[in-house]
Length: 77
Image 1: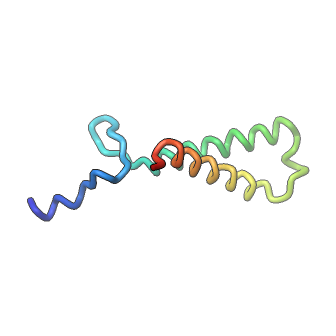
Image 2 (image 1 turned 90 degrees about the horizontal axis):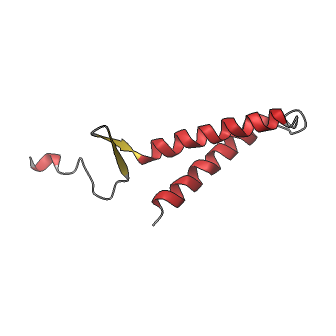
C-alpha cells in the first residue's frame, strides 16, 4: 500500500470523467486541435489560405497558443 501512494498526486491537474481520472493537459490539447481546425476553416472561408505562407505552421502555432492559453486560464496558479 505504501508504494501506491505516489501514483495519485493531489496537485496533479486531472478531471474525473465517468469515474476515471483524465489528464487535464489532454483536454487542453484536444481543444487546441479544435481551435486550429476552426482557424483553418476560417482561413479557407475568407480565402486567405493561399495568401499566407506556411499555413500548416500557422495553424499549428494557433492551436498550440490556444491550448496553452486554455491551460493557463483554467489551471493557472
